[in-house]
Length: 71
Image 1 (cartoon, one colour):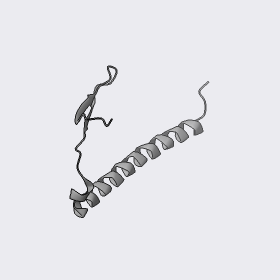
Image 2 (tube, helix red, strand yellow; image 1 turned 45 degrees about the vertical axis):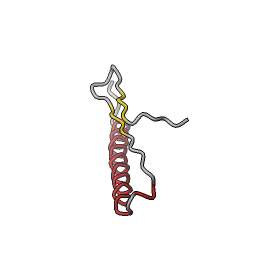
Image 3 (cartoon, helix red, strand yellow; image 1 turned 45 degrees about the horizontal axis):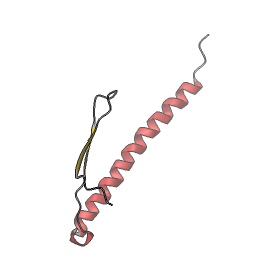
Image 4 (cartoon, helix red, strand yellow; image 1 turned 180 degrees about the horizontal axis):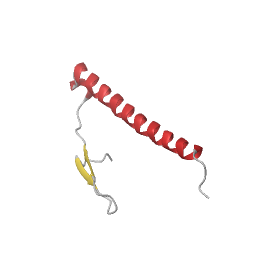
């Protein structure tokens, strides 16, 4: 059986922010191509943002590895 919750709030006690999930069921045939294109572009931009964050984290790890050990 499909999950019928449309709004859900996820909170963790050790984090200052929570996540609000919103689901809007809609039949694909009712979604105009222009709206679908915007959603695809938004997803792509979100993935590119995550890639940028990961690249920055990787660079930080590489800088830590090239530093001489204290001692």
